[in-house]
Length: 182
Image (cartoon, rainbow, N blue to C red; front, side, top):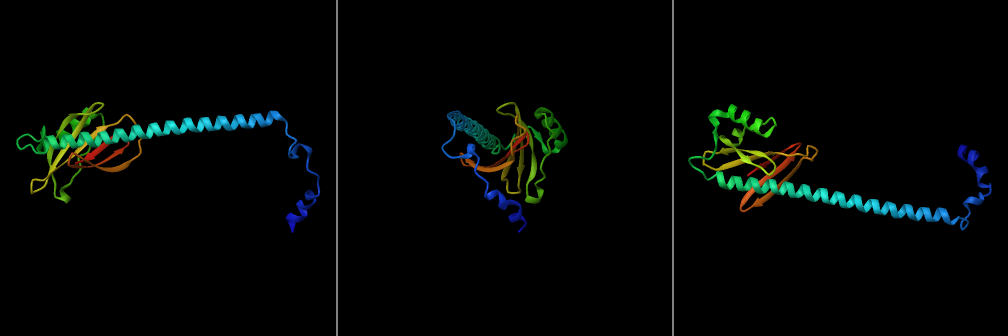
């Protein structure tokens, strides 16, 4: 009732001439078409840039899985020299690899899963040094954790799985570090 009392008188008012259909001037119509065309062009450019960024991110994360799988395949079968620095020097290993990668690393403890640390090594990465930590269970099964730094600290954490030449790799990027468990 209050709304009717306030706005019903407006229903009987005449429509202003500037709002009558068919009475538009050609200039505003031309401007609106130009604005729509510009908006479509900007949307297309933004979409293409987003597509290129996501494709580059996907290629970078697939590369992480691939190099981790290769490093695993090369070093995990080694009997005499599977690692550069053994688990008996764990503190030294962590300090050394943290310094080389320029990031504070922590070695995961996987003893609850039946794996003990064998040691680790420094490896070349696509843009600098990378680290590999090796674990082994009582049956001699090995798994490796490959760690590398990334220049893009804004990358979202994303967990993925891949099989590279028969090696299963679970990999993710978290902040400026990329991890791959093979």
